[in-house]
Length: 330
Image (cartoon, rainbow, N blue to C red; front, side, top):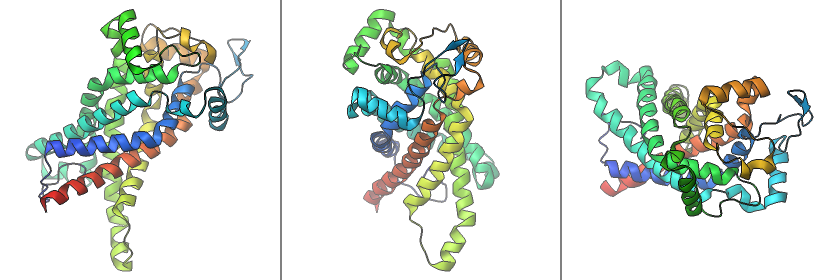
């Protein structure tokens, strides 16, 4: 159901695809939000992750978070269970709008471009590349529209105690009052540089793994008579695509998050060292200089776990929602 299929007479409208994408985003976000909180906390920590006594520029830097389980315990003890859903309201808004725009745009692009492409490019093993391009463009469209929501969400998740922002609306008002409308688009360049390949890889790898599944698994299924649920197929292919995509573009995700919290240093003092950056390249240079190459991959483990679940559930819920909506026309 993901992408235009000329041999299928799908009756789903752009609105249907948008609804399916929104439902998928909402359900996935509710399940995966705690992993997002852990990922962001690690990404915004400048001190070493694994060794709390590791030297940074000749000093003994003590890390607040040194591992996933330790971070989870620390957050729970200091901030309570609700902390794992910090920023959930703007995160849900982000997921719903993003899912709706991304899948609607993707389905539109694959259908619109199909008549202009050679048969070999939109079908068979060349299909993943076609989906990579359409997925990258659709991801950029959705990201630009959702960037202000993502900025607010990151600020809410990144703050410690006592809180600077007590609600999404208060955060919007204070951020606008302090720096104007441009503050809602901080980190847009690294975000776009990250999103195109990331979204592209998600859709491209998903098409690839679905094709591999059809070649490797479909015939044994027919021979044995054992049917693998469609939901399991969608989740497995989505999870693998999420793993590959996140690993490929993770450093850009870290840079994006660090730029998004610029001007927010006061609320982050309880987490350790704070740092200011002048640009994306300055952020990369400082991170590598002060934290080493490993610093570009802080939070990779929780981020990878989140990506596996998020992308797996996203494609699974989207396909199930599309199947449900199609029943109206039968």
